[in-house]
Image (cartoon, rainbow, N blue to C red; front, side):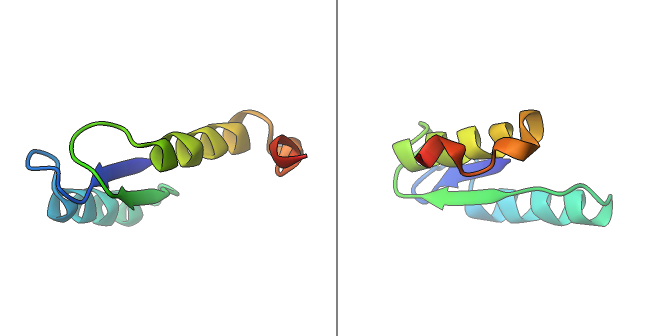
Length: 67
């Protein structure tokens, strides 16, 4: 899971895209998230990161957090 804020001056969307291409080329399944904000983690990123981790840790529990 990689993400960046649209206004992040350090980890830019271009860097995120470069990293995504690297992971894809090396056959890693990676989710990405670009959110409103800067270099801090926004609520939307926290939710997506949590879902990503849940999918890795508890693959049979997908969707149960919403119930």
